[in-house]
Structure formats: C-alpha cells, structure tokens
Image 1 (cartoon, one colour):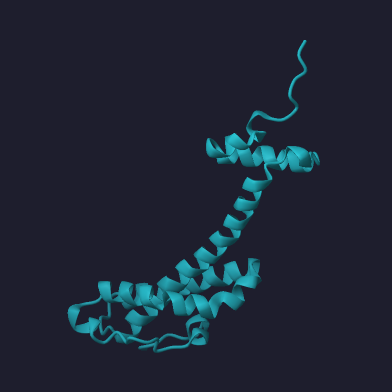
Image 2 (cartoon, helix red, strand yellow):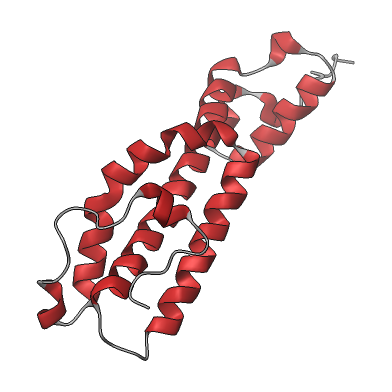
Length: 157
C-alpha cells in the first residue's frame, strides 16, 4: 500500500491560484501542526501584505466618502439630501474609527491619505452637485483632517 501524502490536497502552492479559501485553510492547518516545511511561504507573505493593504484601502474609501459629503454640506443649499449626507458622514467616521482601533498603525498614514484622496472626494462631490454649486467646491480642502475626523464637526449648519 502506498504511503498517503499527509499534506492536504490544497496545501500545494498551485492550489492558491484555483481556490484561495481552501488554500488558506490548508496553510492554517499546516501552521497549527507546525509543518513549516510544507508551507507556501511566498503566497502566505503576499496574502499577509494584502490583508494590511485592504485595511488601508478601507480607511481610504471611508475617508473619500466622508470628505465628499462634508463638501456637499459645505456648498449645497439643498435641504432634502442634507440628512442623508450627515448620516453618511457619521457612518464613514464610524468606519474609520473601527478600522483605526483594530489597526492603530494606520493613524499615522491619515494625513497622507487625506492629501492623496482629496481630489477623488472633490470630484465625487462635484459630480453629484448641481451645476451652480459645482463652482463653489473649493480647489483646496476647506477643513483640516482633525475637523474631518471630529464627530461634532458638520459644516453648513
């Protein structure tokens, strides 16, 4: 009788390209069994790095929405959408806060994220406003990062 390969089928590095979830479960089992020689180190490293990048991307996404709606609150005279924009601001702040609690190292990246994503947030706001209001959207941020993150800060009343 042939000896059975003790590695799960999906511990093979090629499984990474076909079924990431099964591959990940197999890698976790190998780690728990301390079978370090059987691990797919290159893809594990890539996945760990990707996980960190996903956290940063989530913060950036929340930040873009947050700034977009703060801009709309700043320049728009429309009454009806204001409640939705304020709710969106609250949700985005909450999302950022949750991510920062679990990933505090991202806090020092916030100024860079704010600067890099200002243009995207501005363009999103412009695309959603009436033509007369588009001209009112400032070229530079009218509020600081501290104000953006401040739970009590809401421009435009």
